[in-house]
Image 1 (spheres, rainbow, N blue to C red):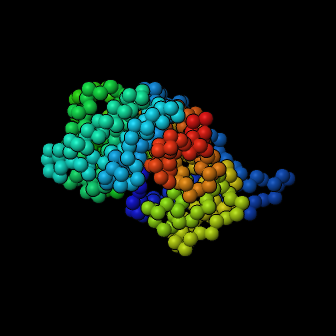
Image 2: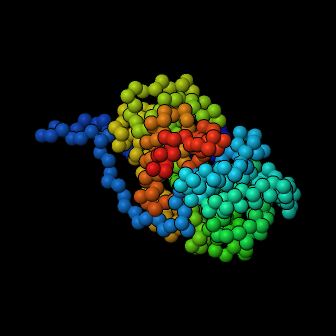
Length: 393
C-alpha cells in the first residue's frame, strides 16, 4: 500500500464533489413550495440499490490476507516484517483460503537486459510459495512497489516484461493455485494508454508457459474502481480485473504518517455523522476537497454520509458493473482501516466491506502490514481479535 504523496495531488485533481470520494448530489437547499406533508430531507433520500448478478467464483477463492511489508519492503525486515512459517499457519488456522504475497522484484533485478533477478531473493519467494501450498493455501504472487515504472513507464516497461519472463518460466510447473498479479496499483505516468498494451504483452508471455493460470490485472490510479472502465483486457476467461477499496480514504488513512498533511485529522468515525465533529488540522482546512468532504461528513445522515454505506456501495457497484459489462471476473485485493481510527469504527467498516463483497460473490483480501493495519500477531500466535471477528465471523 504505502502510497506516495503524489497520490494526494492526483486525488485532488480527480475530485468530484468531495474529492476522491464519489458522492451523490449535494443537498438541495432551495426553498420548496408548501405541501400538506413536509418532504423528506434530501440527505435522507437514498436511491434504491442497483442489482447485479453475482460474480463467478475464481477457483475456490473467498477470503485472503495480505502478507504486507515483508518481501515488498526495500529489504525484508526494514519495515518490521520478516516472513516466517507461522504467517502461513496462522492464516490457514484462522480460516483464510489464500494469501497475497507482495514482492518488490524491482529491487533485486538487474538494471540492464535481461534484468536477471537475484537468485537468493528468488529462492525466498520460492520458500513463501512452498509454505502457502504446504498449508493448503492458494497464493497470489505480485509485483509491488515498482515506483520507477510509474514515473518513467517507457524506460522501465521492458524491465517489467523481463522480470515477468523469469517469474512465469520459474513457476510454470507450479499448481494453478499459484496466481499471478502483474503489477500492484499502477499510477502516475503509467496511464491506461500505456498500461493496457503492457498488460497484453505480459499476459501473452505468461500464456506461453501457463495457458490457464489465473492472471490478475490492477486498474489504473492505485487500483481504483473509477478506472475499471478504462481497463482493456484480452478475452481470456482466466484474466481477472483487480481493484482496491480504501474509501472513504479520510477515514481509512486518517493520521497516516506517509500521507500528506491534510490527512492528519483524526477521530473520523464510520459511519458518519459523528456525535461531535472533529477539529480539522490547519493543513486540512486549506484543501478544498478535504474541507468539502468534512462538511458532508458532519451534516449528512448516515445513509448519504461520505463516511458511510453509500460510498462503499458506489465502489462495489462500479466493480459489479465492470464484471457484467466486460465479462471479466473481479477481485478485491486490498482493504483496511488504520489503527488510528477507533476500534468500533474499524470493525463496522471491515464488516460492511466483507458483507458487501460476499453478497456480490467477490473474493477479498485484507491488507495486513504487520503495523498500522495489523491483523495477525504472528510472533504471539494470536490475532487482533475485534478485526478477526469482523472478517472471519
